[in-house]
Length: 326
Ligand SMILES: Nc1ncnc2c1ncn2[C@@H]1O[C@H](COP(=O)(O)OP(=O)(O)OP(=O)(O)O)[C@@H](O)[C@H]1O
Ligand SMILES: [Mg+2]
Image 1 (tube, helix red, strand yellow):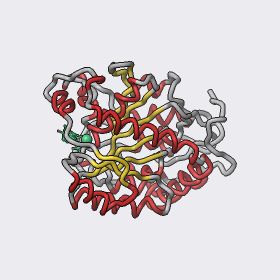
Image 2 (image 1 turned 180 degrees about the vertical axis):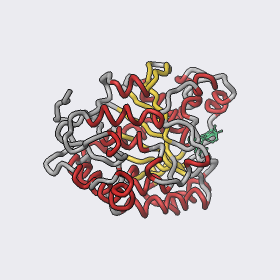
Image 3 (image 1 turned 90 degrees about the vertical axis):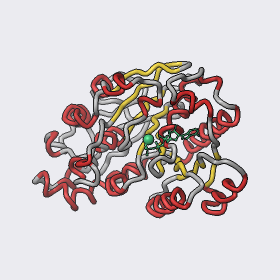
Image 4 (image 1 turned 120 degrees about the vertical axis):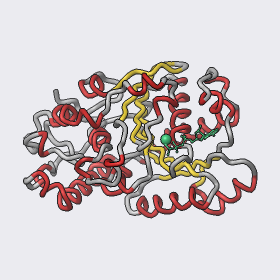
């Protein structure tokens, strides 16, 4: 199950993704946690100290390795140089699975011990000013998008991505790569305006979007969110002393998380799990081709000097029944 947490800066994306990841880990589910946000805070939110977080390998620095592995023996992708972030898998490509070991995880993922079990953490790498809003070619989240497009995940397997609700993810198609997207919104006009923008992009692509209200303090806050986002409001979360203690560097055991917040996380989990029956691999594949052709035309063909439309394998549909090609 691929889950994105998006929202305005400071809304609580990292906090809520990290709590959700902890809840999944406590229930024993295999989890890959991905930090694709401009502000790389997921590692610390999962309890890493500064040095540990700084020592995480950056996916953005390992793109050649990632591309080379995923390309496999796909004859339509002649070289890593012509593989762009939207290049879809085809016959001969290598696919990723949540539970396996593979060279991509070896290079880019690190285990993080949480109460109840370890998760794999992958990070895009810190963004600099130069990364923000620059050409698609250099986008740091391209590595994440490539991995998502080559991933065949089943139910009871979780990939949780902490990401920005930025224009980057709309241009590339990254925002369509999830079974469900949790938009974290504070009960403010700004929080809600990010929701509206996301909803607008999401509408044409059947993106499943649910709002998680955060820093909600009372009925008036709940009423505000309900009035602004209607039925898209899934649940609201209030201030958490557990989170505050964690931020002081004194993380309590996860089972001490407040009951109401634990219930909210359980609702996120059941919402994720029930979205599985609406998963449609054909549509998923069609959308990645759509965004690939769009990116090819707008910058990729020119950048690589080849016709990237030829990378599309017309008979290929991504899906769980595909066997790994090694
Ligand atoms: N429910 C909560 N209870 C207590 N503190 C919270 C809660 N949600 C968020 N915070 C605090 O608010 C601040 C911002 O949260 P967080 O870093 O999760 O937001 P973000 O959306 O990931 O921000 P950024 O855009 O900077 O990545 C943090 O200090 C966090 O601890
Ligand atoms: Mg964050």
